[in-house]
Image (cartoon, rainbow, N blue to C red; front, side):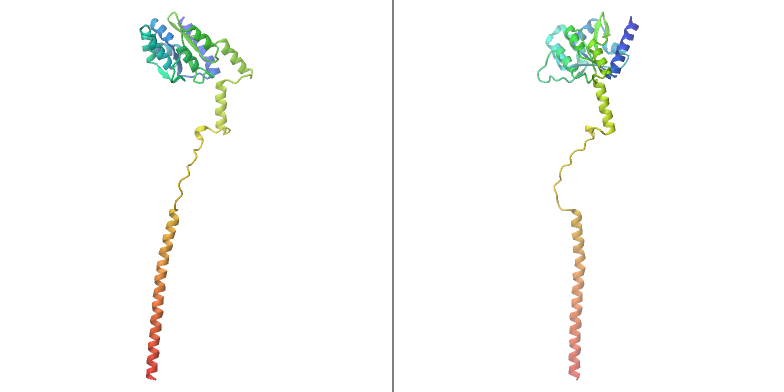
Length: 249
């Protein structure tokens, strides 16, 4: 039975991997009902889930699920301890918490971009999840973990994609990456930041040039003074000579 279950799980995982881009580590969203069923069945989720899915697995939950378990009291204390050991994913209900089922349903909206698995024992939640294509569903039957087969909605979606009527989220992402590689679409990470205008001030190079000019003009003025002094001396010497000549004559 165990080998048969793993074969089915491998087949279903291959379907979601090829058509919706599901990859390791598999992110499994747990609600309170699934944690309670694991507790009753003495299932070690951290050990058995990776074995069953044959790959790395991350156990996740939300704040709404934790809050719901707290309000339910002592009867679900053990389930709350299991959920508290999971990684908490951010949900859109920051201010006003909602029920666990409503919260998990919101986490797989818009094509399930984060490739979450939903693990629940809630029948109403399971029916709603099956109406959303590309969401793997897990539950516990007779103390064993089961990955449900792809829902009719999921299979119909894949057929529509193959017929060219729809484009899956996985294909949209790959097309976007190809366009970015070809330079047809600008990658937001590669966008240049706008340079802030700096306060304009005096150019330091122009200041240096002015200093050089000032230094050049100083020796020229000194040389002019020397020339003037020489001229005055020459004139005075010529006057003295002329006066001596007149006196001798």
